[in-house]
Figure 1: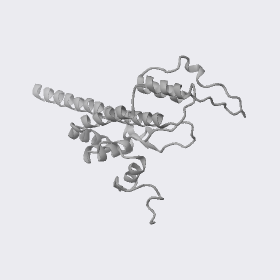
Figure 2: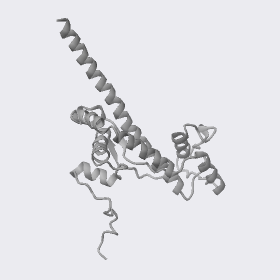
Figure 3: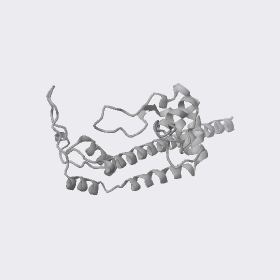
Figure 4: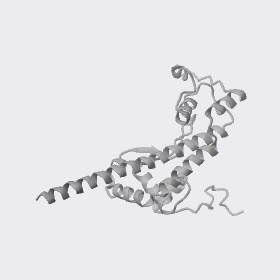
Length: 217
């Protein structure tokens, strides 16, 4: 009887350990998601032709990348606009943009390398990550990740167009297929990701997604 109790406790402890390990693994996958967004954000800032002064996006981006605010008074970032009025946007000078980027201290190459290395470290434990994802996928709609949605890619500021949303469970499906099974260096773009989710299709990376480039000349 005593042996049975010990075996039961050992099994329960083992199950708890697996769950705890999987919680860490799944958290890491969404840390990889955050690094993906960070890279896309830095890339956007570096490619921007102009940036507005005291902008909430710039402050949030600085906090995302550096962990601190760029502007001294966050409450002064967004001026109060009365209904019907157009906001008067003041743009950064080239010197101000250069200073912001200098203080950001993170180039697109830096952000991509951090993202890439993090994914490579996950791939080193491929089997454990696959096990944890499969344990979640089998739950289907009962999974807690089926209820939460995230933007698949970077949300461009100053536009009403939003990137497509995806459940965290679907993100795990895409991550499993591209990062763990195919061992890609990065997550696919949103068109390829949603093609995979909708029909299991994998659009080759060398195929242009531009409707004009694919037309016969």
